[in-house]
Image 1 (cartoon, rainbow, N blue to C red):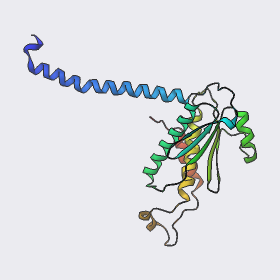
Image 2 (image 1 turned 180 degrees about the vertical axis):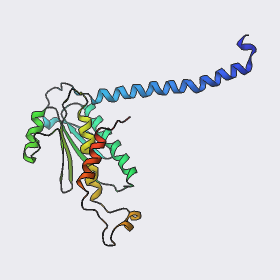
Image 3 (image 1 turned 180 degrees about the horizontal axis):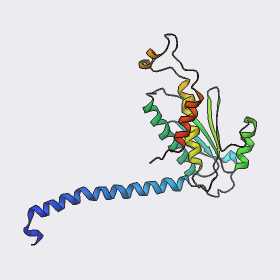
Image 4 (image 1 turned 60 degrees about the vertical axis):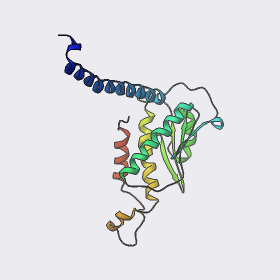
Length: 207
């Protein structure tokens, strides 16, 4: 039996290849993207750079400042932007607000000098709200034998940042029926819910 003598078999093989090849290509492309993301997230020995010369990355939702590297600045901004967009969809939040801030320091010593006045010098990162200023601070250093560890801190504190931001604005119209007539803004969220959601997000896996 020769394949040229079996048009139905040839057509079936062509169809099969048309189905399988794109899947292989997509898997290969996804694998390459994941490797690029992991490389961007990995902590390295960054050259000494004064904070005054920090790299700045901006997108629609965030401004990131870091004296590590441009790829880290971009990675942090894209990661948190993606997390916030997901939250916006989940909670039907469509308010436009000023960009949120992130400061990522190249050494733990630099971070501790900034964190000490707030009482967070021993932490792995924190979120601070002072009026309209809502900022994440963290040392972009490896911990727990995980070279991408700061990602967990970013997702955790990014959740707190979103919750704080969202609660400063009015409850969306369709949901106001669940509250008293004169209540249009939430003032607080239970600690168990705030920390529970942040803890869940910090161990989430993203693509």
